[in-house]
Length: 149
Image (cartoon, rainbow, N blue to C red):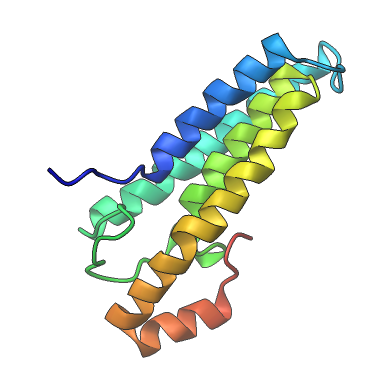
């Protein structure tokens, strides 16, 4: 039986668990005092909303959101006008929001680790697949729109 690879939502959930664990087990230092830490709700909400918006655009275009699966078309509307990977951006913003809510130093190391994992493990493969599937349309889009923001 072939083992399935972990997909980005698994990395996202693992990051949330790691952030909360670090906050409670090894908080080190408070960076964002209460009540200012509640501003993190904004980052969390924006990140989740961005993810939902981007995912719905994929559903409407009847193409896959899963990495390693062939895309039926290129989505360039909505958040895809300013980011080639708004779902990853949304997850990163949600993690940043959670780090602010938690307010301690150690959870903040998880967000850059998440961004690095997406940038190394998923984005290169996805962009290579899009290049192969969509050719010139993808190249023009990639030239116009930045990877993250």
